[in-house]
Image (tube, rainbow, N blue to C red; front, side, top):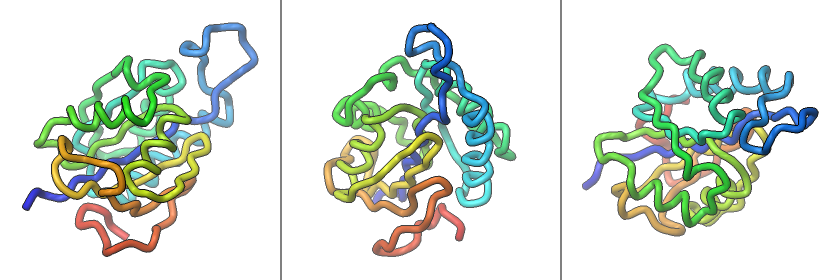
Amino acid sequence: MSPQRILVLLRHAKSDWSGDQPDDLRPLAKRGRRQAPEAGRWLEEHSGGIDLAVVSTATRARQTWQLASAELRTSPPVHHEDRVYAASAHELLGLVHELPTDALAVVVVGHNPGLEDLATTLTGQSVSMPTSALAVIEVLGDWQSSAAGEAVLLASGRPPEAVPSRGPADRMRD
């Protein structure tokens, strides 16, 4: 039996629309700079640790992770990934399939609608992800075999609330 895997999806915090920069260069808004650390504090309190962060190269996603990860006692290695920006659920699932087998808990910092669609695809449940929201998903089996409807939504929201499921995750503390 494969060890349990936890996929945490983190939508970037609120971005600033006041400038005229290209979409991928938009920074966080003041509200976003307040939201992102809250997500990090929740992760620190409720996760058993994160082994890897896969972060969109968009400015707002990188800033979100920088602020969120500053709240973690141990910050994981970060992989900045162009393919997360504007990715569909199908494309994001392809990235999940490529995750290293030794990473048991991975956070992906990205964008909607891709993150919402991925969470919904994996769990079979409708998952709303406003800015700075988290979705914590238990992947049953290896990353490479992750498939539609074969994962369990453990928690979601801003801040995340537990979702009734088949049982608590070993790597998630209540």
